[in-house]
Image (cartoon, rainbow, N blue to C red; front, side, top):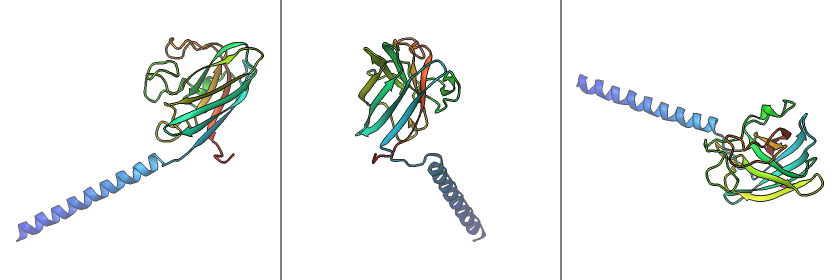
Length: 188
């Protein structure tokens, strides 16, 4: 009988410990990855010390993809690399505080039409004449929610063309504009 009590008590203690550990893991999951349901984000681009680029880019959830729409001014004619960078930090005069391209899946750099690319690879802005450019496309890689969300990351517009081949950045030249991606008013 004494042996039975000992095993029973051990079983109860083990069951209690497993239950506590499971509860702690569930609580940590809730606090480390908050549930979000963002449908729209926005970044206002300001010039770096090197450039004159200003503009706004919005990200709107469309099914499993995200529509990217932007209007920019202060660019020279030609193509200009357009990327999401890993940090929402535009405090450095040259924009380097935004870090490298946002690449949570550790892929090679590529074009926005490639499957194997950085999440932040959005291609080039084209200025045909004047100093303005616009962009409007649907991107299947960009995420507004979950562990790879772009919320809080940076937008960088470069002085040169992204060649889609040079690693790790496409050799797009100096950073001419920088902005931080934030949650947008979905009703606006």
